[in-house]
Amino acid sequence: MKSLISIFVVSLIFFGCNSKSPQEYFSEAGINIENQEYKEAVTKLEYIVKEFPESSEAPQSLMKLALIYQSKSIENIRADSSFMKCAFYYGEVFKKYPNSKDAPKALFMSGFINANELHNFTEAKKIYEKFIETYPNDELASSAKNEIENLGVPAEKIIEKKISKKI
Image 1 (cartoon, rainbow, N blue to C red):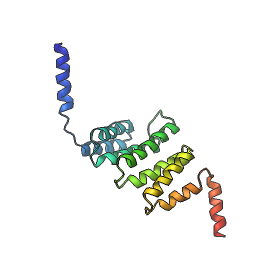
Image 2 (cartoon, one colour):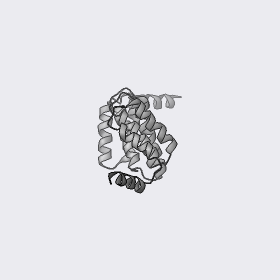
Image 3 (cartoon, rainbow, N blue to C red):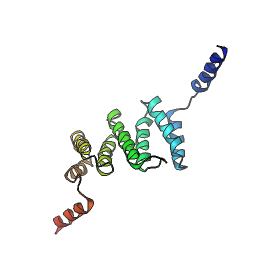
Image 4 (cartoon, one colour):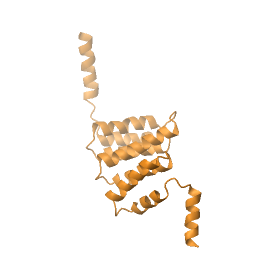
């Protein structure tokens, strides 16, 4: 029993005295990213989101998490799994922080990843429609409309279509 109490006290001291701010964790994660220590960065960024959800670093952390997975920087994760995590993190920015400066871009990118990497056109269309409804005056609104028009169309066909309109 004494050993359990000792472990508890040591744990409390170690974890309870952690006085790092979300800014410090975010800064450390940035250094991890620069040093290509992506797993360590992910751990810190996820910690910020979980432990400091009201901080300004939380939506920024979700954006960085999405970018890490978008760039397929985590070893031993299949590309489709990486893109699924990417789309998830972008979606979380919009769901949890709809008023953040990153929310429009995050929602658009969630649609883009679903369409162009995961080939989930049904989900992409829903996301793009939500984007247009929520942010009709955003600079990406016209891009969202174009993406809907071209869902599932190969890039070569889109280029041919644009060239034929110019002629």
